[in-house]
Length: 118
Image (tube, rainbow, N blue to C red; front, side, top):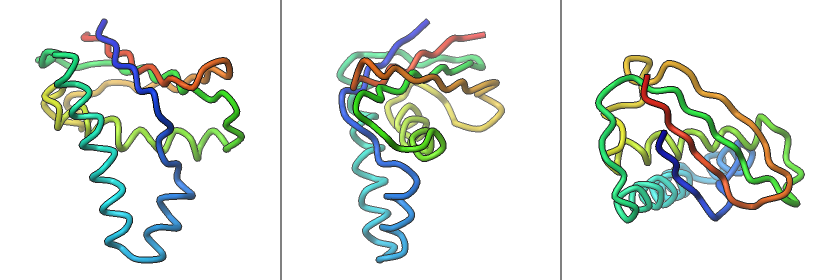
């Protein structure tokens, strides 16, 4: 099992949607910012490439976060793209990912991404 800890809140669907409605370039800028940040976290923690297919469990740190679950877990886009950018996964399609599970931890602000090679 490989674990990546993200100690900041990822934008939810509503935030991304509102940015895209305001101007496409703002949404693209935000996507790049968070994808790059997660990619750099992977590199900083020297997480190795996982060759096979994986199951991913995300435990969202939702302390004082009152967003709807579907709004919160839309942040998976930043996570998966960041894992690819950071060299942890070869891709983020069904060829490489079998399952994604979402859980919530109302006692923490830290989001834990757990990757299980199958």
